[in-house]
Length: 276
Image 1 (tube, rainbow, N blue to C red):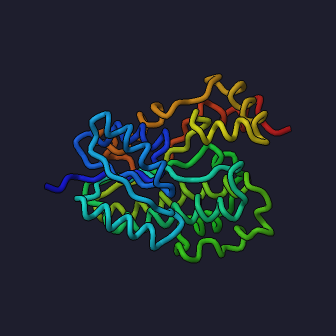
Image 2 (image 1 turned 180 degrees about the vertical axis):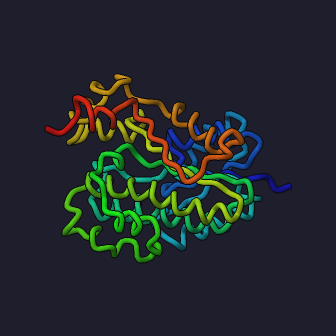
């Protein structure tokens, strides 16, 4: 018998934590670009009693995302989508970040928005970095939100003569994620489904450890020290918010972005982290 299906794209620490909260009694499909990552996550969740299967996907390839949609639909009704895949500023050059984090997210939202079932919900993991980008113009906001997916990377302000470093590319991508979700919420709503973004701060995952040990590590440590919380977050804390957004208690929430960074953004704009 087919079950309701939760698709997790990028089953790292955050993706797994969310799956634990929302995947009980459902079939959890774990998809990653690397099969060993998906298999490792499947072993952990399977040993904890979840019904899981795995797939490989390049979230920046339309053919691959469509194949994942077909795989998921073959398992049952797609009631949840968790998009937690991406690359950080220390892991990739600007062009790759824009392709994976911006274009790939728009692609996932479009393809799964075509099949999400009534009552379904999606969560995209964005980043606090999108909140530290200076304001864009109204026209740029609209372009990031509504430009057809295949034209998105051709926008003039996303060209590499304009986006010259990985952090800028990452900030634009994550701002774009929240704007794209706002626009997609209109389309998902016509299917009776909801979608939101969560913008975490520094959450202790392997990706965060890459950043802490990378060229921006000193800045990351200072963000933690100067934040109101005075610490990094945990994947389980992100999962608590995601469970709200994907569950019945969040039924009135869609098209929204939830910043949860321990106060880092507040300190950046109005506190000790403010640029001199």
